[in-house]
Image (cartoon, rainbow over all chains, first blue to last red; front, side, top):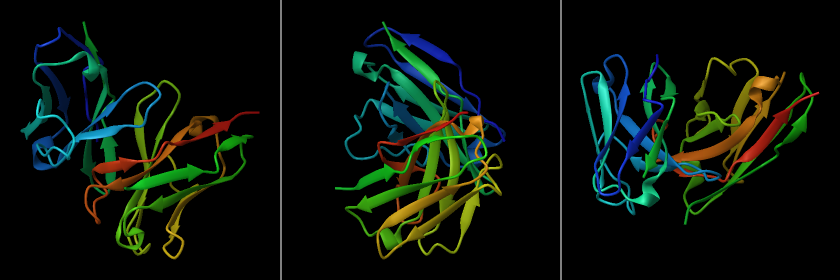
Length: 105
Length: 121
C-alpha cells in the first residue's frame, strides 16, 4: 500500500497551503499528519483525519475523502516551513507518505 | 509530561546486532501501546514495529520482519528493539513513539529525540 505526496510545495506568507496525500480508498481509513523541522523529532498536527492535538494552531486542518487526505494550513506563517508526512494504517501495518517539503517565501 | 528517552544506538558492522531501549515516563506505560519509527539520513519516516500494552501482540514492517524483535518491560517502563542481521539499509535515527490514545498504534502524539544507528564496515 502506498501513500503519495507531492515532493514540494511553495506558498507565500499568509496564503493557504494544501498538501495532498493519495492512496487507494484512503478515505476509508484514518489519516494523520506530522510536521518535522530540520534536526527535530516529528510533531503530530492532525489525527483521525481532522482532529488537532492540544497546542496545534487552528490554522492547521485536515480532511479525508475518497482516495485523498488533505492537510490545509490557512494563513501560512514562516514558522510552518517544514517537511510534512501523512500516515495511514493498512492491513496490520502503518504506512507513511513520502513527505512534502513546504517552503514559505 | 510525557517523556521518551531512547538509547542504545551506535555504530555496528553489517551482520551485527544492537538493542535499542526507550525509557518512558509521565504516563501509565503498562497501559499504552508503543511504536518504533525510523528515518534514514535525508529520507522520510518509516514505520518499523509496534507492540500492544501487554506485550502480547506485535507488528513489524516487512523490511525488518524476522530480524527485529520488539518487546517491553512494563515493570521498568521500558520499550526495546532487538535488531539482528543489520545491513546498511538499517542505518537511521530510530524514534520511540506513543499514540494519541492508550491503544493507538496508528497515530503518534509523542516522540522521543531518537537514537542514531549506523551500520558500516
